[in-house]
Length: 259
Image (tube, rainbow, N blue to C red):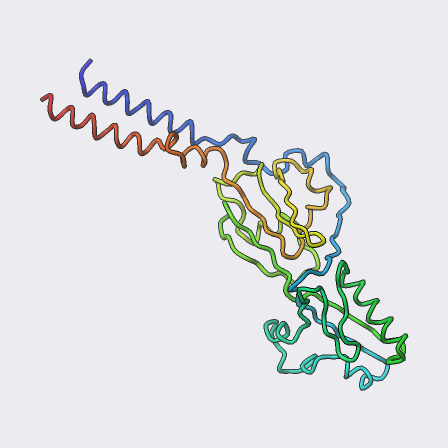
């Protein structure tokens, strides 16, 4: 067998190996392949537990609006506060001790409380202290965000104004997974009662639709790991293009010296 034919055969072998290693099966690519089994599944909405560094907008109303003025921030409802950034600067920042400093009422604990819990607490304090009669209290989180990293089209941190967005909606904010993203290995990092928790989600199954990770919580971090094909081509063993390049140089040198 001539050197040129040997070169062609070896090159063809490496190309075939490269194609096989870069293949991703249909089973690995399709989302929620058992979706029919979860038809008419009840949607479970999250009730966010307030966390350190949350920024809250708290509005207090009363039958006589003038009576509620001391309990509202200076720019609440002002024409000046016409952007979300300005409103955030004027919001109530949850301290590292899980407290906020509220006008007249002083320091209030928000530890392990939801926005609804805090609304009820403030309303009770205002009524029991004789400050207001039948007040309306509204608490809203201003800086809800989710961070999405790894094999997605646009990794980054994304803000949202809704009380709840789904895991799939969050991935949509990042432009969906790339062709190299593993649908079977999406990691969600979540803070629960001051503890960091982790959960691996398999998007090729619809099982996650019936659990607590159907919806994203503020401050969640989502990491999309690379799939097997990406991992193979990233390693020195699976880096076929590098091996093929080196082989080509060697065989070309042999051809030159054997002529």
